[in-house]
Length: 180
Image 1 (tube, rainbow, N blue to C red):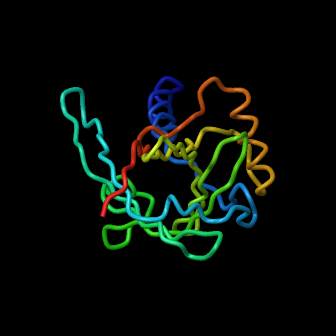
Image 2 (image 1 turned 120 degrees about the vertical axis):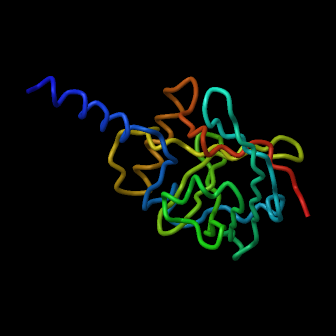
């Protein structure tokens, strides 16, 4: 009997442990602490390549628009590559919309993007005229987060104890370039 249950349980466990972007009801800061970075405002685009199988890939353009909501927050819109997000129920009319603000921790800049009531956390890396968004994986911490302070502590612990942060590679937006 144990052998019969072993394989289905293993299969279910493998499905539930697939990575997705980290989301929480909490952000790194309870309220925005940093003013809007004017250099982020505007339309940005990149190409995202998704591996379909061993022989096939699919490359799609993705556009992200940052507009100023107020002195401390952005309105964001993500257009393209939305089929990956449909299962998270955040896509409206082929666009993902939300608000965001910046936080600093461990000498790095993070964006707290609130979409459909959940806050997604990603590191922002600026490189000259380009920048990249590295969303943290859902498994960057195994702690139950009950506050913004607990999230900050877990993030700082993760960055101090890992040689490589745990990013969700599937949702990474690298080398975003400003477009019209």
